[in-house]
View (tube, rainbow, N blue to C red):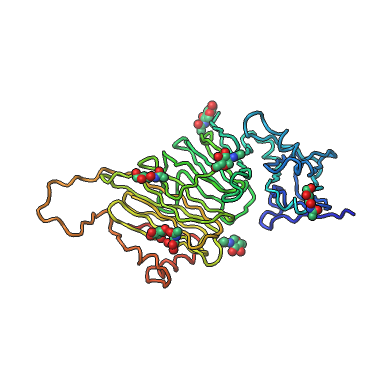
Length: 407
Ligand SMILES: *[C@@H]1O[C@H](CO)[C@@H](O)[C@H](O)[C@H]1NC(C)=O
Ligand SMILES: *[C@@H]1O[C@H](CO)[C@@H](O)[C@H](O)[C@H]1NC(C)=O
Ligand SMILES: *[C@@H]1O[C@H](CO)[C@@H](O)[C@H](O)[C@H]1NC(C)=O
Ligand SMILES: *[C@@H]1O[C@H](CO)[C@@H](O)[C@H](O)[C@H]1NC(C)=O
Ligand SMILES: *[C@@H]1O[C@H](CO)[C@@H](O)[C@H](O)[C@H]1NC(C)=O
Ligand SMILES: *[C@@H]1O[C@H](CO)[C@@H](O)[C@H](O)[C@H]1NC(C)=O
Ligand SMILES: *[C@@H]1O[C@H](CO)[C@@H](O)[C@H](O)[C@H]1NC(C)=O
């Protein structure tokens, strides 16, 4: 006997504008799922690398016509590119499956329904990140790219489940680029923005001309860009290294850990020249599990160190240290952290004055006036007991947004 399931939307999304995203594992056998708030003319997409036999068992009905999920994920695809063509939804949408619940619960694919306005917008594009592909601006209009990472079976036994690499990212110096988790208009997290260029935070603004390859372990995310949007190359996969050497003297990159990943300790070695001054810093967003903390340290070329304890109550932070950076470390206090994303940067400044002659009496502790804050690691990041420094940070942590500039 068939009963009817009326799917409840995520509370944050309810009634916003009719966009939905669901894992195919949501749909259970012997139940007819009816999606509410679907706008006439919206597009439906299926992004999946699941077994085609199981996809064929999922029926999607709209405008009185039945399609199966395999059909939609394959047929509505444009040629060799990963660009997807939506199935137009008219007069309601319902989904049934003849897969048993054991099979259903193991499906990794995703179903996505846009708004009608997004479906009509040629600058709103949906892709599966599969084969290596480069996106190049064709005009100067603002763009939105919704990128689905299909589950990669070759990484099934380890992590991450869904991941892609975005590289060769370039943009007009007057344009604004933002990368967000989830899909446009539906907040799956409290803070969705995870990578920006320019970085235009409370007290500083930087445009990055070089961006490192970004390893993004998210099932779905989106990139918005003004002035034609960015040029970038996307491909399935991840950068497994925990020690990263940057590729340019001024650069920005990303360390991201998603809910289903084992968090590790990361070290980024900056490609920095000690003859120069500069700044280094970060923007951080998170939804961490209770009781865990991300510990981060910026290490200046001249020995400067600034540490940050980013605990589970903190969803956003930005910090900057004067002095060209040698390295940044981002450490996990537990293997299962929840989600965090850490955009780091290092920017080369002016050439430092060269020392005139070998001083006869060299100072025992040379500190340039540019780097007044030199603290020891222990004072900033206590392992068990909270130090005075930590208490100072805790007060700042009360507000959801905190900002530090160490000069
Ligand atoms: C579910 O379906 C699979 C594939 O058809 C089958 O191998 C399995 O035995 C079924 N499990 C149950 C509990 O019916
Ligand atoms: C965008 O291009 C159009 C024509 O190609 C031009 O008229 C317009 O000024 C451009 N806008 C910007 C912001 O560059
Ligand atoms: C899966 O990931 C591996 C390792 O990152 C990559 O080499 C491979 O191309 C990916 N496969 C697919 C189908 O995306
Ligand atoms: C980074 O650079 C160091 C020093 O040049 C080198 O030993 C190391 O192998 C490099 N690591 C990676 C991941 O490229
Ligand atoms: C996200 O927002 C909700 C609702 O305001 C709140 O209950 C929750 O604690 C927030 N989560 C985090 C990690 O800040
Ligand atoms: C991060 O962990 C490494 C060991 O993996 C340790 O040497 C380093 O001091 C830690 N850094 C910070 C900022 O906690
Ligand atoms: C990772 O960093 C944490 C915190 O700094 C430290 O306690 C832990 O030992 C480090 N793990 C490894 C494998 O180095």
